[in-house]
Length: 132
Image 1: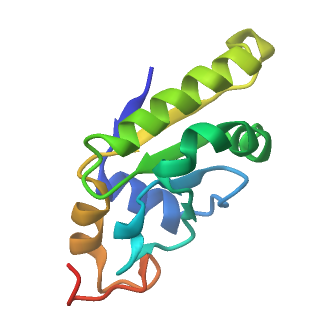
Image 2: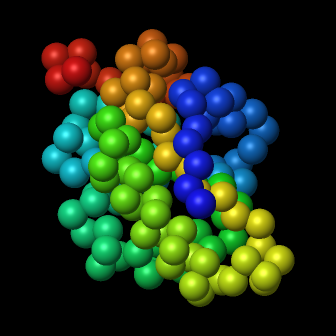
């Protein structure tokens, strides 16, 4: 079951000694609204091609125990991508395989996270006030 994670909890993960692409991965599924800022170290995987590319994403992330999805608000695209990813991963890598895994959705999406941390370059990059 997909879980939600708050902005401060995600910030703590990013600032910890955990490594992206090893211990966690943040997947940004925004499309054209990706311009104007992003969470530092996030992987841009637009929702418009998500369904066709989920197999490749699965292959690239199969050993990562925590994958966090988000879009602008995390109301539609982010949760949908997380659900599709989790269902696909559970089919390909049965929970009984011994691989602990959690799919998360960033509560409030990038808009909330970006507004909260836009002045911290360790958390947000490419921020443009004119867009937000």
